[in-house]
Each structure stands twice: as structure tokens, then as C-alpha cells.
Length: 314
Image (cartoon, rainbow, N blue to C red; front, side):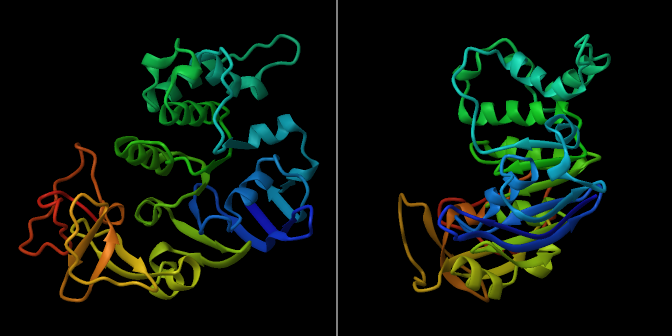
């Protein structure tokens, strides 16, 4: 349903921000875009939803070239959630969400016959009922993010494009959001920095480095130690956690500290039969929503940190 061919973007000085990027996205697929800061993830997404029109190459959605689409036509096909949050205008959450229905409204009567039902469903999905009459500027960063995701959903697009949607969200809403994206009957292209989330919820991943697409495919095939070393400059040991999910631990390429005892720090030492290294605690985290199946019993705990004994992690 989406085809990107030889997409190239240059800045004002001629530096390539994207360099000959090509990929496809099938109907109903959830695909993650991964890469270090400055790799071109946001630039790619901005080309897709029309914010950046200065590019060479072809972007086609449902057999229509997006460069030939009007803003309304594009909005009916593509819903976008950028990293930017709304300016501090005195608008209610309800009003912000309702603007997502603009492409569906009649130019002359402004009618939208089933719009309210669509809005009510999306509001319920994102658990925003209690926020509808609040001023958008009174919300936290994570709450604003959920409002903008809701606004994109009420557009009823064929493709949902999200730029770091889990940024600012607490762990519950990160998990719920990714589950909702997976359950939607539309294609999703989402940039992430959380590799376990990408591996768990995305059908495929695209990996960018310096504006070039260096790898794509199923997460378990793409996220190899060699790729992490080349693209992200870290040593990685991947493993299957007790929930039978892909997980990993990482350390800088140039510094591995064994058996470190560090108190009151986000860095903790881990030890297994295969690897001992220093990793960020956030890399160890795995969680289930409280209504998910319980962990399988096992006599072996693969990864335990000093201050997280007894907790689930990956």
C-alpha cells in the first residue's frame, strides 16, 4: 500500500539527510524505523506526511503519488503524529481531537455524519474521557502526546505515521499504545528508540544510518550484534526472556566494566553464564500489563540487577 523509491533529501548546503532510501509497506503492517540520533528518521516521516516536499524519488500510497495529492487527499490517506506538541493556544482537548475530522467534513455544510462515533471510539481507546474539557496547555507532555495520537486516529487514515510516539509516555501507556497499533486494521510506520518494543510489536524494522537504509526485515533477523556495533556503536548480547520475547543487554564498544557494584545509579552489573557487562537499567526492562498472562515458572532467572530483584524485566 506504500512504496518509497530512491528517496533522497538534501539540506541547504547540499548534505544528504536521506540517501536513496527504498522500501515498501504492506496493508496492515506495523513497521518500526530505528537508528541513532540524526540518522534521518524524522526527515523520512516528514516526507511521507507532506511536511517536507523538497525531495527526489517517489512516494506512492495506494497507487497515488503523494506529491500530486492535495492536502485534503493526503489527510484522508495519512495520519501523522510528530514529535512537536501543540502550541499553547487556549484550545480544549475536545477541540484539538475534533480537528482530525476536518478532511471528512463537507466544504459547504461542514457536516460529518458519523464523526462523533469515530471520536468517541478513539477517545475511549486512548482513555481521554476525563481530559476533554481541559485546556491543552495544562496537560503534561505524555498527555499531549496521547491527544495527538487520538487526533490522528479520528482521521481514519489508511497509513498512520508516528515519530517517537512513546516519548514522554509512562510504561503503561507505552504498552497500551503499541498493543493498540498492533490491533488496528491499518498500516503503521513508527520511529522508535526502544528496541524491545520494536521487536515485540512490529512486523518488520527499517534501520537507518547517516541517511541510508542499511538493513530491513524481521526484528530477530535484523537486530544482530554486528548491526548494533556498526550502527549504534554498542556491544550487544541478545537473548529470549521468560516471556519468549527478544531482549538484549548492551555496553559501549570501548568500555566494558565487569562485576561493577554501583549504588544510586542507572547503571547496573549483570551476570549470566554467557556474558558479564555493564548495561543501562532501562535496557533490562520488560513488562506486562496487569491483565496479561503470568510469567512461566522457571528455576533460572537470566538477568537480575541489584535493585530489581523479583521484578520482571527484559
